[in-house]
Image (cartoon, one colour):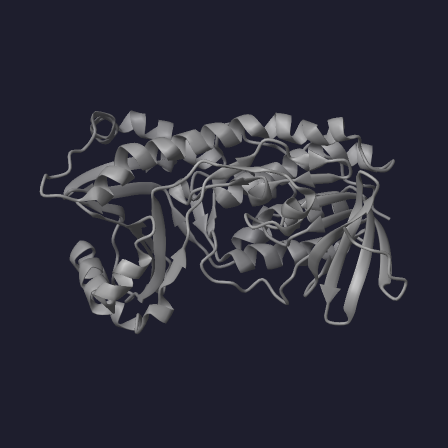
Length: 415
């Protein structure tokens, strides 16, 4: 619990959003657009962090369209993916075809997350009610009895107490505010971790294969224009074993699975170029305390399966603004009103996590066990590959999610 020290600087706002990721920046934009006095705190000095979710799905592109931001957004450098092909034990399969969707933007846009976040920050500068504070890390909650009344934060100029009618935790899967609030996390678990690295790409190198699965090995590759982004899947807890085998053994496995990487793999010079992503699936049963709401990864960490994390975070932000923006004009909504966000978003979160667990248990776990027996393509994957009209079903789940949100929060009149 934060103590009162009169030497601290103080600031009072209607809403304090903690965390400048996709959930926090989108929510800050939406609340600023609605005329709510809101400050977004980002602990880093910039958004430039590699190895973050870079997939912007059609559901998020539709939100950007509804906000009138899509034209400028799609002018940013990005690559587009429509057809998701794979090799399963050497057998070609088609996982999904987004071109079959009846949606305005039938593709996944691959864009560095820092470009997405910088775009939202620049677009939000026109709202006088929105402030983004960089290099500002929330370290504790301010309480008045049982009610959360803001946060204490570290800045380059010292500690600041930011008093807020409502505090919204968007500070990720290792949320400080969630921990300070004593909200219990239900761990669902994942059987794998991911090694994330880049390989160089020549202008004439093209390949549509997205996923490769072999006995004991699994890998995803993304064409990012001038390089290949690679995700090498390992069994949970096997990072040290992989390192003990040596870098060259890992790179040899990579090239055997994806020969197109042969010329560019030399860019991986040490294990310092290979980042470990620890995969977790979890969620909160309770997303709120009086004066506090958790959304995005702070409420539910997703597996990288399907690359849906960014888009679920954006959907949470849209739902939060839809449900609470009007009520926030008059102070902090009741905890029952705050809990409406969980009631709206819990079903799509649980369904998405359930589908991720099915993929983990039915495909990934079996593949990572290895062995001499050849992998068998499941009946459902064979049907989807053989009957192109079926490819729109996984495409829709991937692209739009279980319950896509649309912008209903109102824009404040221009001053």
